[in-house]
Image (cartoon, rainbow, N blue to C red; front, side, top):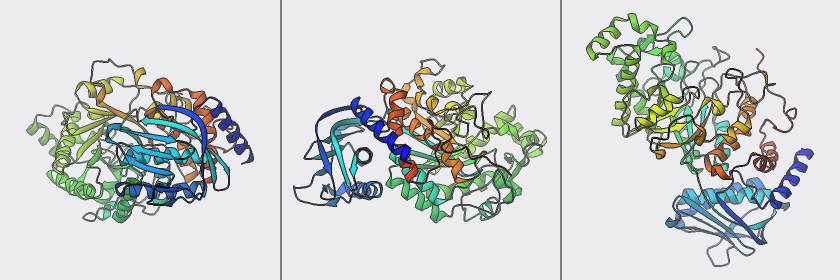
Length: 522
């Protein structure tokens, strides 16, 4: 811990010498003026009523991280002021002078981002207990992309409410704003559905490493609490209910809706040839939709071919193919997603799907495609040429289950390729091997996906996620021309003790031995 503190002091002085604020992500525009603001227990905050929740969050988090208790005051002698200015257009302004701090945003979300920057500055410039001496930074900042996401796979390893909240805290800290919550897959079903209780009670049994692990799932009240907690941090939560493949857990609970599987992936699919399947899943999605104000549901649609071989000989599927003119099993898969997409759209929500659905003729106005196969850039190009809004989340470098270093023993590689911190940081959409003949506004942003085949405990979650979450955040926020990995590392050095303080078992990129890799041993 002493070594980490020394590194922090050194990195802060280096960052100051470069006149770069010790913030992650690095702001779009900044300058440094003369003088410092003394942030101590005498400082008061003033704000309009419409920013009361943002002010409350700031006071709570500042106290938790620094011990400084900011008071509220309605008079003119406050020294932190919050305000709204719609002309800033998706931006915030943080102005620090020796006598006053102003945080002005286009809307409450942008004010929140400005306050998060102020919290990071206070942590960086703590000179004594409950006192921060903050230089006069002038910052005007906006995100490079509107979608700055993280996906958590809880089917293969169940995190629990408190762990998800800790991750949400750091998502907010790094200005990430979309939690894609992968709640169902073959190993386990993790969300309570009241009309079909066995989905959670039976489908929730087991995980990737232990098929007999006691049932684990989120009640609907817990879902509501996590959604509320995320909203307070300006994060939208999007559920994924995977279909028609990756349905093994659901089919354990209600086998009458199974479409079979393969030897390697038994009972892998929902049955596309039974009308009852669509009614059943529509009722499931109706319950899900009421729990998530995001008005978005991810339907998966990936890797169906792993376990749909029984479709070819099923009489109901064959009848469906003849009736609907479906020429092959991929057409059946697309038909299934189209039917379920219609149900979701009818509920007033958008449909999200993996890049296998880029040619499934979904409504381009009501759908978002997630490009994940980095070795299949043609799928990204297809989605964009078909007019789909698209989130970019390629396996390399944004599958965080992939190992970070060659010497890591337990984890995934792609043909020997790892997903190190630097690759996550330096990724740029400008480097994608696709044509430029599309509307660039169709690319909504970036997302990293934390699949959990290699996760067996909370330490492993931390080791895979931190500090790559910080690199993702800067890649999605900061202008590409302003990014420099060496400078990012200097700023990151100051964040490592904060992970330590919060009990996070992070991977140390400068000292790999600091936290040995958590390895699963049955």
